[in-house]
Image (spheres, rainbow, N blue to C red):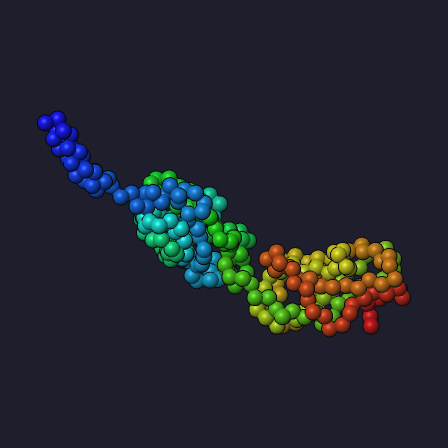
Length: 261
């Protein structure tokens, strides 16, 4: 009799196991949300804005490609931020496993600095965490407005380089003039004249419009010390230097230190 009772209990327990398993809720993205709170589970692969470039006071919308590295879907809220300021937000969107393109509503965000670098935050179960970025996403001020696209520079060509007075005496202050031709899009840039690795003169935040223009540099007490001083012109666009091709070699030689051919 006792053996029959044990068998009945065992059979009943075996029937209860599947029912217990089915009664447990499938946490789905809730499980992945634990991973989503770590930088490796959600990642921003791409961030774009439309229009690009955007003018002062113009409405702009953002699109992001978010990679969900977990195996579960879930619903989250996403925020694009410039430092501590929320630029755009989207609520209760679904993130499926893999890459997800998320469209943010239009905003009249005011770009008020030379560049604005964005971060993305995710809200999972009322907990906000930053999302890893595949690269730095920055909107930089250009001649046409703020843009997140890589600048198209040049081709740039230096047609002439002069200094005044010419010839110059040792220790005398000189002023340089560079005639630069821009065959590409208008850009804003820092222009500097270098003698090897030494900066001789610099012109900050200059507009290089399409065509050929003269650019005057401030007086500089540059010291001519060697037998010759050969100059190059470098254009720095958004922290990236571009050396400008030259029509000829521009060297000052000790005949009263002159740049004339």
